Image (cartoon, rainbow over all chains, first blue to last red; front, side):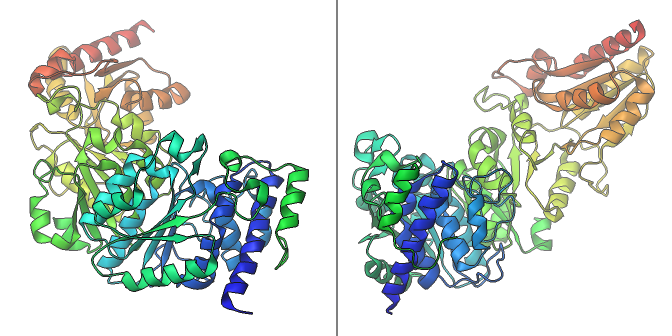
Length: 281
Length: 300
């Protein structure tokens, strides 16, 4: 089996986890989680140089990943569990009282793999910049990655951070935007258009690579290209075109499934479309 | 400066107020560890949170107004809820910022910060204590809000006095009333002691430099003796030191308490000493409050 095939199989299983987790507690955000599943699988199962066996908050001599759009926590938890940060069975506790798998990720309960709490949007890029600066001070040559949503770009703090990283040349930082064009209230273009995001980031001093975030080979190529461009004087933005809900036909390409859970019948229809490749939790 | 020399992990962040915060010397001495974020406090707090990952001890500095109200959600989620080892250094707090007026005179910051789970809140009373506290918080693990003001108050604490987080300082013993003061109001309370003495009132003065965690043991021990209380702070009475102490006393030792604090008002432009007088935060106001607290005790 090729690497791409293996990762695609993992992504299918992760997508099953996502819809099952959100269905189980009838709460959570399946749309963005499904759309970004290919990226997180590519990062955690191929690209990132990380130590999942013994998680350390400081992450010295490791790549770091931050999830700024914390509402896609079902995806984050599934990938962390399947990578071995914690036991797969814990996915059944998603959003349940006393669970470490809070609605939005938190460091509070020491869940391995989580380095900052997120959920209130717009904060992750700043945190990632801080971690990248810390790595520079420590002469640590590994990279810092952060994933944001496109609707999240409406938060002012994102632009404070974008200005900082561009002007101060935080070039060990790779930011990724899930450019699915949807947010809770509807299409981003109707709610609050972002204009030319690529041109905006470039104007802030970033290097920008657009790519298709639902094509595994293209994801791997893009991540590798970005790594090669690190430490060359610019932070990088990977403008990741995805479809919200990708992988489940009736959830694809609509904001409707941003933050609602499938019922029993919808779950069955979704699972029919997602091959169980590695065993459900 | 001293703490930066002692601890190579200490880094400084500032949002365009290097001069006002007197961070020039730090910037000169440790250019690699100095981070200028521009006028972007939310981003500064986020960067500070991120820098703790990798072991840095960030001191994020700006005016108290911007260090709290402006960036509250960032502090709440990225620092407090994430239990990050960030030291928020907030200067120019309260009315005595003076001429710049109400936009900059934050009187709600202690409340905002003390309500955050896990946040330590420190308000030193003079230069020596500010310096000692700045050193002490570096070796404390966890988020800290360090509040200091602008005006020059006499430097009356001893230079070699160690700063112990959460341990109140009993400055003057007395028997009729306890004055719990914080920040610059400790000096105003000092001034009030003589006048009270002339009026035959023996006041005990305790410097509550750490508002959270509160030294409840010291508070109860003193009030058991005096059974009447004045709290003095340059802050709204809603949510400040007085409320923290009232909470302790209501549960353990109900006693007459008078607040010297701003009462649900915004400030205005003026000289610091004028503002203290107009808003009834000067030594005279403390004397009046103490007399009233003693009188209420006697009526019980």
